Image 1 (cartoon, helix red, strand yellow):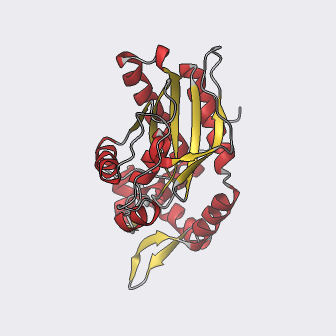
Image 2 (cartoon, rainbow, N blue to C red):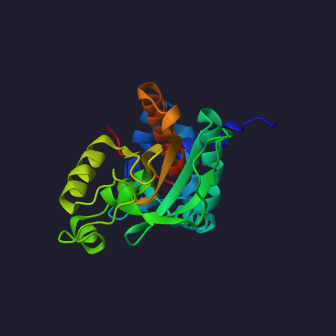
Amino acid sequence: MGRTVPAVTRALDILELFLDRPSLSAPEITESLGLPRTTVHELVTTLTDRAYLIPTPGQPTRYRLGMRLFQLGSVFAEQLDLAHEAREVAQRVAAECDETVHVAVLDGADVVYIAKVDSTHPVRMVSAVGRRLPAHCTGVGKMLLSGLSSDALDARVPRDRELPGMTPHSITSPARLRARLQRIREAGLSYDECESNEAVYCVAAPIYDHTGDMVAAMSVSAPSLRWNGERREEWSELIRRGAAELSQRLGHRPPLP
């Protein structure tokens, strides 16, 4: 392992200040990082010469992020492979709980599984990458439906049409589904309580991309014989962390508190 280069670290520290503020002056950078004024001046000059920073129009003593960072970010976004990133994170989550982990995306009124890591238990959920299920019957699907606008939800799940059920526990009422989706938005978690399979429970969390849009959902699924109150709480926190890690890989930054 090589050593870190202080000058590069300081330059990156300067750039990262702009993640929370649209523009900064050299004195503000100096105060925020506690660096000598001459050091900040030299670093800002170098970053400006390389188009990583540019003077703010009408305020030449203030700086904002430059085109070079946009170009690098665009290349990064083009290289992202959601399925690949999802599988890597799902593997770590599955290793921690030893239950089946899925990542799914919304397609119309259905969910399609794009990544799956199996439990090592002999009794486990039967599913497959590429499988399609009604979104309202699954934890990942309800999570994804909860991220839609009212108009987008109405287009996919009409209010005047009963929904198909997969088990006696499935939600078939559009009004009841909408009430459930509101609770999911408030909790940030979605549960499937034997709604897609009479013997399986799951908990799902949202995955966001760099624009802040919900683009996928991740879940832990387990047979009812291994599901209880303690594990529900444990796996809920685990799936929150896993989904947050995958969101971070996709460039998402959660809003500041």
